Amino acid sequence: MKNYKPAPDLLKDRVILVTGASDGIGAAAAKSFAAHGATVVLLGRSIRKLEKVYDAIEQSGAPQPAIYPMNLEGAAPKDYEELAVTLEQEFGRLDGLLHNAALLGTLTPLEQYDLEQWAKLMQVNLHAPFLLTRAVLPLLKKSTDASVLFTSSSVGRKGRAYWGAYGITKAACENMMEIWADELETNTPIRVNSIDPGAVRTTLRAKAYPGEDPNTLRRPEEIMAVYLYLLGPDSRGTNGQRTSAQ
Ligand SMILES: NC(=O)c1ccc[n+]([C@@H]2O[C@H](COP(=O)([O-])OP(=O)(O)OC[C@H]3O[C@@H](n4cnc5c(N)ncnc54)[C@H](OP(=O)(O)O)[C@@H]3O)[C@@H](O)[C@H]2O)c1
Image (cartoon, rainbow, N blue to C red; front, side):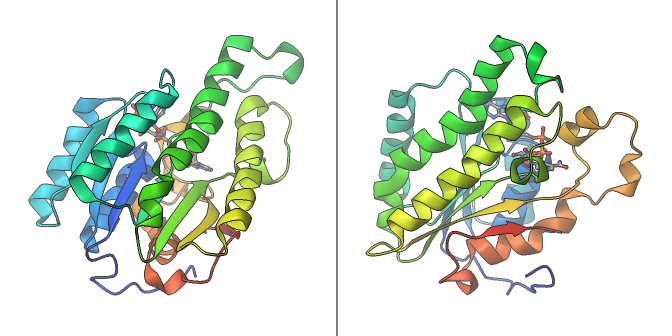
């Protein structure tokens, strides 16, 4: 998968929603999906940052993307329903969903973990991907080949001291991915998997490892092969898998 060579038009005619598309891995994924022919819906909380990604995609000559501003921290179930209605009106279906947005929080021992931060991370990293998947399920069912991808982390696959709610929400997302995959395996066109990006040069990584030289890390653009594989038709039949980008 890591050496996968995607066809230039791999995602032609696919509509793919990317959360946290304003920065880091999500911005790179959105650009990469668009470069391979997808119409990308850019979801994020900062319109200004989303517009930069939008402009880059538009200027590249890729299919025109769409922006959907949404702060996952304060979003209620009705906001996800509204998003689904808008997508239905604009596109009629959804072929891909990348759950990428996440908050790191401050690395702290569980004993002293701040409860406000706990609630915030649960909301953005765990409740949001659940509510969003549920809201757009009817649209994914309208696709002939839909792929949902959850973003995990090494600390979601093995608990590690001080990673607190971040690690716990990532572990829960892995389990949620497996439940969705199992439930949707029969009688739907939807496959559901997770991806651990590995160490990548982003704001989140720099916050977690302030002493690290970012130049030793891969850039988000360099880890896109597995993302493209999982969002495109070549991964048909891959379901319920915990994958890694590096
Ligand atoms: N980088 C790594 O080494 C690494 C390793 C393992 C896993 N991951 C995972 O990879 C994914 C992407 O991380 P990244 O490193 O690219 O991080 P990043 O650069 O901090 O980007 C995170 C994205 O999520 C968005 N986001 C955060 N809170 C949000 C909210 N309340 N509502 C809407 N959007 C929100 C951010 O928006 P703003 O631009 O407005 O902040 C940004 O677009 C995450 O799931 C992360 O856990 C990363």
